[in-house]
Image (cartoon, rainbow, N blue to C red; front, side, top):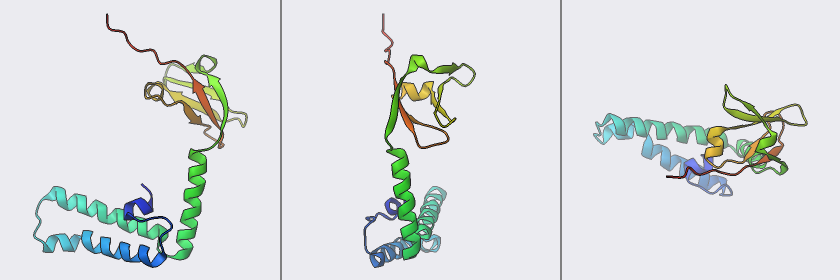
Length: 149
């Protein structure tokens, strides 16, 4: 989750709204607040503590207009990397197989490696990134269903 999702606010929200939302959440999840309410369940205390830390970290990413601008740039760059253009389609049969790691791999034109695991294939993952550059490939393969006899 990104900082905006943790704070449950829109990325384009006014900075004052972001700050007020943070302050409201931090008061709600502050460990002292929970102790004052008499909660003794260790599970609830730990869950609250984790949420408090997530809120603090999220706020740290966007706590000033300058930090927010930098964070927004990083989110945009990350989305381009995740949603990047597929450079090429490669048939699984044309990739090499590493039995020890149970992965198929192919070399990228930059010298990096595209890797896809058997687990990825079983989970219908078919777009993978180079481990060095931002290029992506689509792996073509057919899922073979186990037939019950």
